[in-house]
Length: 427
Image 1 (cartoon, rainbow, N blue to C red):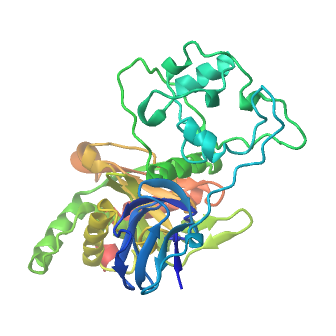
Image 2 (tube, helix red, strand yellow):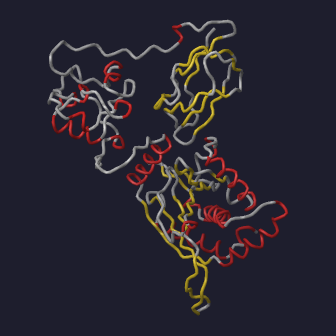
Image 3 (cartoon, rainbow, N blue to C red):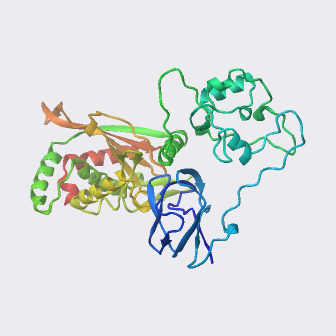
């Protein structure tokens, strides 16, 4: 009996993904555990394994296809010696019933038919491909983009295609009727944005990861009232301890970074200041008894935050080893969902770029994030005398719905004390 292979949900939040690459072809024999495809989720590119054995009879979704919904049949596998029945492949989406014949443009429907989409350079059954400038000019002139053929890359409609185009009732402007309600407005991040096409440029397609980053950061700044608290921290004692620990750990091949020690300090500070180790849910406050610190890592496809579980309870050598492994696999897009989803607070360090101070955006549903600036030699008062010390600025961003300013200040005070007297956090 043939087996349908469906788009998997590779993370709890995944609703759709990009079928980045097929690792098999029609006619290949596969067994359980064999790699079938690379799937780009909202966080990473992951490999998808077969759970059954058989022969790949038909691939129904080609590689490179975007926005494939979870549960969509992407291939059909035949049992040994069995042909794949044609009915096993998913049928194309039926076109909406045609409206009454008229010379005017048809009344709008929730989505274009597969035929009209293909004729006008649209993604299959989704949207018309047109530059933002072409869309704006078409709206101003009353030109129906569906009546044009695109001369741009992959059939994209550009400004030149509107030259000489005759105005007509565009679908979006058609009078609504009780039987054909207007489609819902597109999400804000998909609204066309005007830019000057006369400037030499190139277009880069957004990955699912970049789309998710944009959506989550917009959500965070729009829905979470941020409060920012900054402290200056003397690093000399921590730098000295790091040097001593690295000498002791050298035979084990472990080399601690300053960031490893700051992760430890934040974990301990969260445990000592439990009012900041929380999540606001609207009608409840979730209070965590463990500090799982998400650490911002820059990758070629965007920012991702692998997690150090129980940062307060594990050794700094374990934190260092874990971070090297997690950061390396993050840059290769090889993290598993449980390695980057969750966490109780975040740490983002831009000191290696020479950034003195910045205010980070909270990573929901967490309640706070610590932004670390560069350590630099500065005049500093020590024992009532002005001296030169290595000083770092740290800024905590707190969800003010859940964390009062005084509680956030207490965490910053605790974090500062742990960094300036680091033996207390590793004892």
